Image (cartoon, rainbow, N blue to C red; front, side):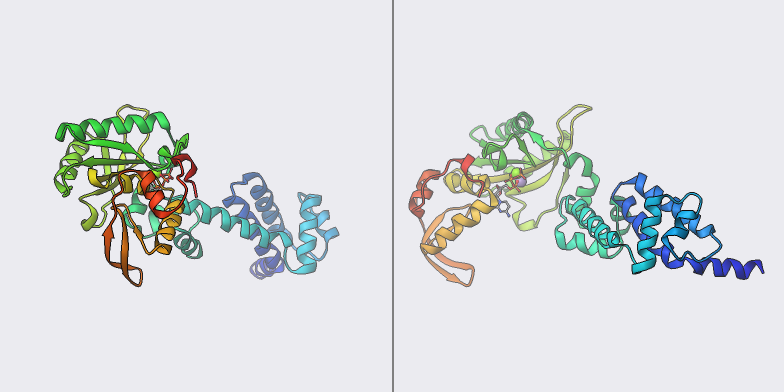
Length: 333
Ligand code: DCP
Ligand code: MG
Ligand code: MN
């Protein structure tokens, strides 16, 4: 009876096939096509084999099964699984979660969730996951965002923003902060702080974005909270030209009178800023991008009142906090 024998045949070595399939699948998602094919071809040979495979020797006797493969089959027969499988699946998971966290706007928790939901590739994420605005942009420009930005391009992007800003108000000054100011040769994004005399920045921000968007320099905007949109732009820009790359661009507008605290804040690093704020708290002070305050009254983490201190320079902020001055290059952590 053909049918019955097919059925028995299928269940004969099904555990073996299941175990080998896991390995093949892991190798495939790890990008090891060669090993993955070795396993899939062994699987199809085993599926055609008419008897239950009971030993390493029997496996080795099957045409097309190599000695290495027979060893693996022997291990599965004797122990029920392959030591290697668990390890491989761990590697696979690590590699994929790592890939997902490289998407702008995706943290480890989201990446882990997506993996557990069965997503394995960027294509899966693109087509099957519900993405917030940041993640949509992250997926759209995934390849470009993998490429770090050399300093000269950071400077070119700043020249562009500065020209437009100064055409709106000639007294405007801009500074490149972030990793660029800390001296990094390659930057993840471009952080530009635009200083103006006005304290309400919505007029400048509107005009700036209108011009930069209509000239196609800005391609996307990450719709930030409405409340901060007047002084913070997070989005994507691209220098003119066929070969240019889409780049992450952040523009922050601040009033001249907050020059030093803004420079400290936007120069970072983020870790360094946390440390600086801790020093402030220990002294009963509060440090933000707007200023340094003493006589601070807190309600939990929320600062209720404080008295602003004069901070004419970055040095003065360090001095008031009682910590030795650090040049931007030394503010990594
Ligand atoms: N910043 C902060 N806290 C955060 C994020 C940012 O204080 N959680 C500040 C300090 C950072 C600056 O903003 O240096 C710019 O942030 P980026 O995310 O652009 O980080 P970097 O410019 O330091 O590095 P990268 O090259 O990855 O952009
Ligand atoms: Mg940056
Ligand atoms: Mn940034």
